[in-house]
Length: 160
Image 1 (cartoon, rainbow, N blue to C red):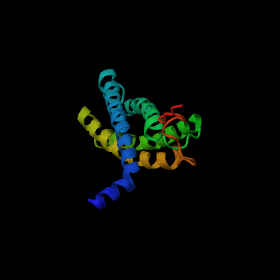
Image 2: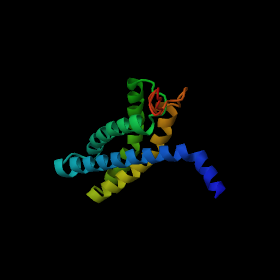
Image 3: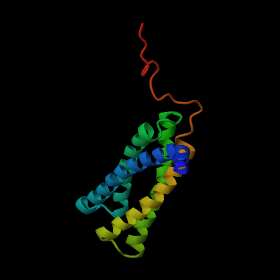
């Protein structure tokens, strides 16, 4: 039991960070998949255009969720810098989705809704691995000074 406790203490911040990242990612995935299907099936846009639209919207949501919840304890190096890098890295991750959907649709000739969605899931999965690594490395940097959990003066009552 002591081994489990030590492992938890050692990796608790990583576990919490991954849980938050996964939660934001799950909601962004629902947004991405919903918009992909809406644009492709309901509106009639092509699968690649639909993926592009869905990714722009879901990426904006993911940036806000990751900046202000998942990685809020990390250094804030400027909204413009972070947002630019976030979208640049998501553009690279988007290539995983575009390649998977493009291969499925145009190489294999499978353009039904199920095939496009399966290709999207594969692309999102590969892109998610790249995004988590790249966000920690380039976007949401380690804090150089500890970030306070509470505002100064909160949590301590001083009776006079």
